[in-house]
Amino acid sequence: MSLSTLSDNLLYIAILAYLGAMMLHTADYALMRRRPAVAAPAEAKVLVGAGGPEVAVNPIEDVQAPPAAPERRDWAPLFGKLAVWMTGLAVLLHFTTTATRGLAAHRMPWGNMYEFVLSVTLVGGAAWLVVAIRKPQVRRLGIVLTLVEMLLLGFAGLVLYTQVNPLVPALQSYWFVIHVTSVVLASGLFLVGFVPSAAFLIRDGYDAGKRRFPYSLGGRLPAADAMERLAFGIQAFAFPIWTFGVAAGAVWAEAAWGRYWGWDPKETWAFISWVVYAGYLHARSTPSMNRRLVAWIAIIGWLTMLMNLFGVNFFFTGLHSYAGVQ
Image (cartoon, rainbow, N blue to C red; front, side, top):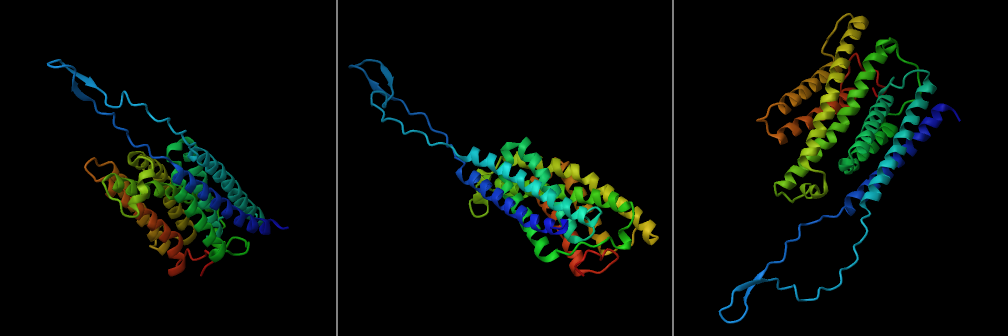
C-alpha cells in the first residue's frame, strides 16, 4: 500500500473517530445532572400550654422520614473522560493522515485546498484537545468542535480531494513554509475560538430567561463568563499569528509578482478577516461594549475565514487560484 493510499484510508478512520468523540461528548452533556437548590423546611410556631411561650417546632421533626432512595451513579464524568480520550485518538489519526500525505508528496502537505483543510482542522483538533485537558469544565463544547471537524474533513475528502502532485511553480519558495505555517496555525486557532463564542451566546440567552431553541441547550453548557474568557484568550493569541501570516504573504507577493499588495480576492478576504478580528479585540477591550455584540463580531470573523478558505477558491479567479478546485 502506498503512503498516498494509506493517507486516504486513514482520513475516513479519523472521521469515524471524531464521530465517536462527538457521541461521547453528547452522552456527557445529556447525562449531566442539574442540581436545583433544596429549600430548608419551614418552622411552625405552636403554643405550649395556656398562656405559655411560643416554641419553634419543625413540623417534620417528629415524622419518620422515608428511607432515602439510593443515589444513582453520575455517568457524565466517565463519558466526558472517554470523549477526551477518543478526541485524542481522532487527533492522532488525523495527524497520521496529514503526515503520510506530506511524505507521499515529499513536501509540506499544504499544496492544495484539500491538504490545507487537513492541516487547519488538525491544528484545531490538537488545540481543542489541549483546552479540554486543561479546562475540564468546558469540555462539553467538544460536541460542536468534533462536529465541525467531522464535517470539514468529510467535505475535504468528498469534494476537495486531489491526487498527490508536486507543488506548482508559484509555491516553490521558502516563503511557502513561513507564510502558510502561520496562516494554518491562526486558522486552526480561530476555529477553536469560534466554538466558545457561539456557545456563549446560547448560554447567555439561557441565563437571560430565553428557553426557545437553541437557547434551551444552554442550561448544561459551562458558565457564560468562562466561555467568553476562553474565546477571547484563544483569539487574542491567534491574531498576531494571522497578522504575521498576512504580512509574510505580502513580502512573498513582492518577491513572486513584483508587488506587495494587489487586492487579489484571497488578499482582500485575508485583509477583511484581519479587520474583523482587530475590531473584535478592540471591542472586547472596551468595558462599555456589550459582550453579546463582541461574540457576534467573533462569529462574523470566522465566517470571513470560511469565505477566504472556500468561497474565494470556488467563486473567484485570481493569482491564488491554484487550490485544485478551479
